[in-house]
Amino acid sequence: MIRIEGLSKKYGKHSVLDQISLECKMGQCLTLIGPNGSGKTTLIKILLGLVRPDSGSVLLNEKSILGKYHYREQIGYMPQISQFPEHMSVRQLFDLMKSVRGNEKEYDEELYQAFELNQIRNKRLGALSGGMRQKVSAALAFLFDPDILILDEPTAGLDPVSNEILISKLQRSRRQGKLILITSHVLNDLDEITSDVVYLMDGKIKFYKSMEELKAETSEQRLNRIMACILNPKETYV
Amino acid sequence: MYKLTKFILEDLLRNWIIHLFSLFLLLAIIGLVSLEGQEDKALVSILNLVLLAVPMMVMVFSTIYYYNMSDFITLILAQPVKRGQVLGSLVLGLGVVFSIAVGLGLGFALWWLKGSVAAWTLLAVGMVMIWVFVALAVLAGVLTKDKTRGMGLSLLIWGYFVLIFDGIILLLMYNFSEYPIEKGVLFITFFNPVDLGRILVLMKTEAAALMGYSGAVFSHFFASGWSSIIALSILGLWALFPIMISSKLFRHKDL
Image (cartoon, rainbow over all chains, first blue to last red; front, side, top):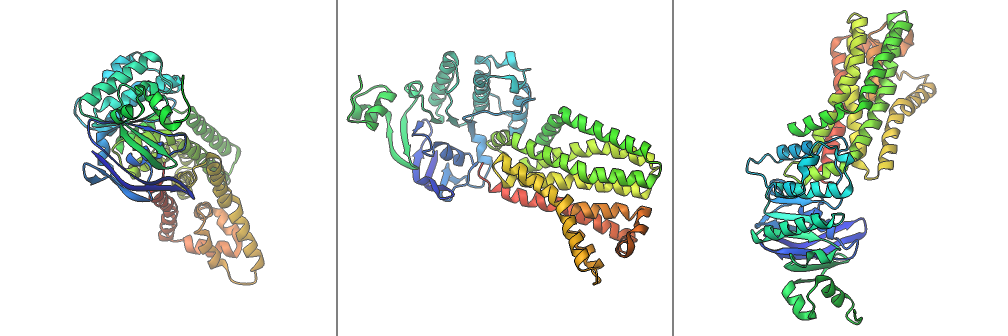
């Protein structure tokens, strides 16, 4: 369970996050939506300890995470753009990550198998295409069977087949009671997995509602239609 | 931390620029040694190579490497590891690899100069100098997020220690030549690792006799073994302080 209270972050004079409070429980799948520069990635980076907030607190299972690092054992993270060292092979990357994590429990290699990464295990990461790197990155996020999954734009750059594999993996993870946090602009992909929508704008939470509420309010079924309805209530969409 | 260091070491050791750099240094040192008849002259030429070219190579390479690895460092930091350990691995990896690369050439020089005191001092100064400039390069990287600025800062630091600082000292000595400032100058050199390294090695050669009154003050100071050890430790501090500052900054940095 994650509880965020009064979180603020400024870059210089520009306020990226402004007094954000948020609570989410295991088994939820939160989709963070918002225009570019609304603070989605900053929020995620604060959860990962990559960015230090100016004020406010972040509690994971009632314990503050600020300045700590052990808590990240429970988190799997897939970054927006995956940059790996050029010369490293896929296998070396996985070996390194396993040794850095150092936990002995069994690995979840489902995505590794499904994306057929075994076939490219000796390829240099620098030689992989953007989509392939995303696959590697996704497989890494799930590898350690974390309780919390944080995915920044996971479906951008993936081909339709891989996209389906990732989405169904996310669905299964949610059924296992994991907490999933996703940011994305490709809303079509997220219909089946989203349980709640958080809309961020100018560093503030505009709304935080469950899919059921949203469907009832807008009498739409698809997430992108719902968002269109809320953001432009006057216009009609054919 | 051990695993990360091992990985960075492997990554750097596969880099052909490092191989080339090492080969270049070895060839240059062999060339200098065979061209200069006198041992001391050859030593001074090698010293200039170690104090001018090596720091620049180390700084440029380390700064670029820091920026190249920054996305990967971010990914590693999303795992349960301490920030200080990640930066430490980076410094350790770069320092060890450059020590090997430079050590090959200096090792040859040491063998050729039959292990004289000056040659040993040169080796020690060369090794410490690598850590000083790796540390300064990483500091420049941590200080600036922008690649171009970081690179500029790092070249500026190199230029300051190699050129500008000497200019200031010369100006000082020229304008205050009427006053007994030799001890002051000796103290000021502690603020420049390159000068300190140069004096440390030169004092072990016969060139010291040619350096006039300041040379006499210096050689008086560096005559005892203790003061050489003190000077080397100060050189070590030059590596330690930037590392400490960067790790402090890095721990609170937004990535």
